[in-house]
Image (tube, rainbow, N blue to C red; front, side, top):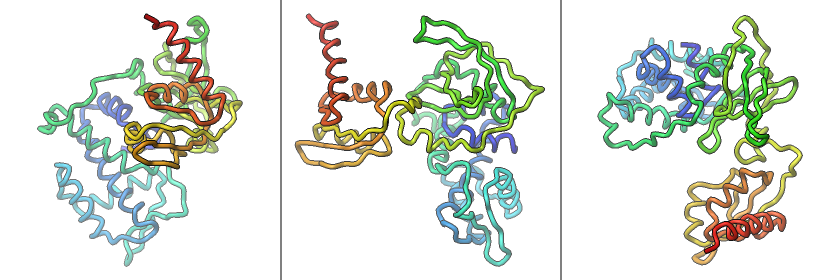
Length: 331
């Protein structure tokens, strides 16, 4: 079970998890219930922000949440204690005091914090399971990214810290194929595509999984994982998967009409998005990030009412794209 736990902080997306869990020993839903319990424990202790929670209170919370989800909701105190011990194997700093209960130390780093999102993912996985009555009401997208069948192999290599070798197709260079020797560290999703983040020498590089072929895992070798990599910090000023450190971080200001504004409020373009105007006539935002190709493509995908206020070079770039599109689609 520790192997499943380790996977949780390596990859926290529903698609990756469902691919992995369906490739295991057939106990998919049993694993989902077990990991749901772990997440309920972590989530409750995180919300308390350093306050101790008595074992009975924590047990009541877990059983109540399990019942809401249609899972067995009669776990014992002994089972709860065993679950907490498993969570501690993930190096979550849970402290126990006899007369106080359990506490997640707020000043200690943890491997992932989006337990609310992960709980939702497991709820969805349970709902669309063919054995669940709820699958009549949950209409999931039956889209499976190319290359996702390789996820379990890559996840296993990440977990066991085995070097890998693979062929990689360079689509921007006439589909030339190169051989890559790498130390796999993370899997990251961006715009319904999966990317492998791996150390090649001293550099962390990204590789589209749909362009990876002939993976060879060096099972008799082991590399030392680079614990200094801070993924949140690495992508903080980026959009998607592009890590172009040679592209400067810039202040961006965009204007939309009120209708597009409603969508951008519910699904912001970037975590740096700030609303500066929200009226019946205009919705205006500012952002701060690197202006990379994937960010420009995202702007173009919702550009019906877009006006680029600044910077000027972004406005010119969008103008050029539409100018060329008009030429190609002229009547």
